Image (cartoon, rainbow, N blue to C red):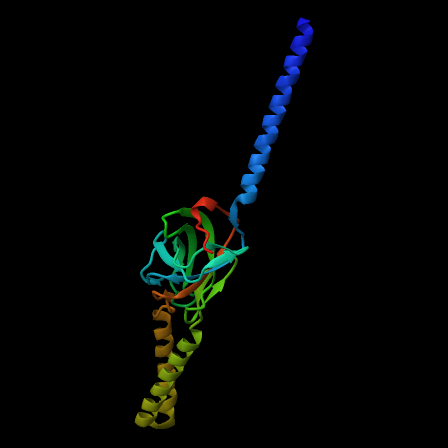
Length: 226
């Protein structure tokens, strides 16, 4: 009888454990199904809240922005308009004297909802439609200043032309040739001494952020707006 009772007890215990495990798995499944996720690749339009320039900014400086349009997925607004976005400057490079254009790399690190709910994320710049003379390059979204080589060539040409005019007035055609040569040399020197143009993003500049991996949200912290 004792053996029978022991076997019945062990069977009941095993069944209880199996039921508890099944209930736990079901609860986890339900929680996962009811969770909210911002999918990787989601693009979010932002507006910069401060000026950023490769002339004065430094690596590690904080970047502040705000969402310019709500992001909705499956009829639910996951990122409302006016959500704060914080990031930092990861790389900065000024334009060179001879070659090398100014570059700026920003990584976004967090969303701060109007309620104060904060979510960590990996975000990068996808596009800078509000910036003049700058484009994005590479998978990380480096903002690069457009080339100003043409302007330096134009400066050298104008300086050479001015030198030719002065030389021609003073010593005829021979003087014009000498003056042009001197003018070209001065123009080239100006180009060598001057840096390339800096990347400058003004306050209010439109920037498009792309979220680089899935970001999980606490559904209870995201209000449902009907």
